[in-house]
Length: 174
Image (tube, rainbow, N blue to C red):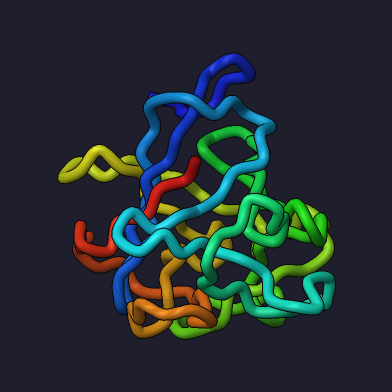
């Protein structure tokens, strides 16, 4: 099943776990091209770019969401074959791996100017156990995760080996 269509509406549920994965489910209200947030179902925290917001190679972190905080809004732009770039609204930069060539677990996930390199491509893969999609980096094949699975503000996103989903750390993208 392809989750991308210009007219298809998407809502993503995202699972973040220590050494775990970010995963995305696909039914409902946000259309392709909408600025959305990756928000914790359990805590309400979102994936955001910290101040000064536009610095290259800045690690993406968890934060409390504010309706005016564009640093916590993202756009999934389809590239075909369930691949996307994920761009921040405030900085207009894309999710990337630190150094751009990282292929090891624990590497920070950062923002960098969008340039369509493989490290800025993210793959959504349906999880058969839950109605979600895993987000993995196209270059490394590693999953997007919250470092140590911590439930606090300012915790960085990293690449991680795939692990079972933990529904107590369910995230949603609205």
